[in-house]
Length: 151
Image 1: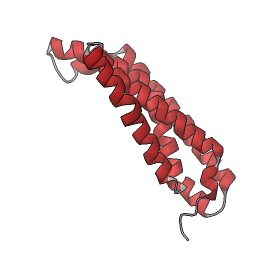
Image 2: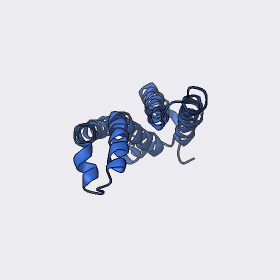
Image 3: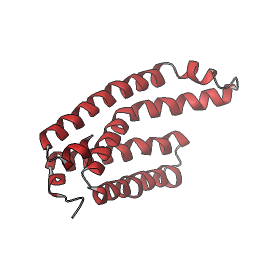
Image 4: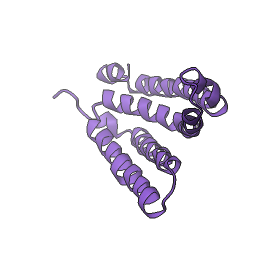
């Protein structure tokens, strides 16, 4: 929808569509985060009876619960920027988050600090939060308005 509005030259409408999508994504993903954080045992019990899997899965679901809002905003903002033709910036933000944040933090946690797998998974929170911040900054800068998708 954002791409169609931009193509029609309706930039104000594109911004409104983006923020409405962000609002809905935050509401839905906050609900998912609450479910993952407060009811991980119940969710996992639907898939397995193995106590070891449930114990480890509970930890991971709580980590992923904290990730829901940054993940939601990143996905919506990336979609909006993609619709505006700003694909290079999205690729750069993804590379910075993955290779500049997640992988180094996971390596430090695993190899130097000898932390558990939970700390390695927690590096995802930093990755997605950095990506969210970069995409939010890019969207608010409105540089996407100058991009010509079709020349």
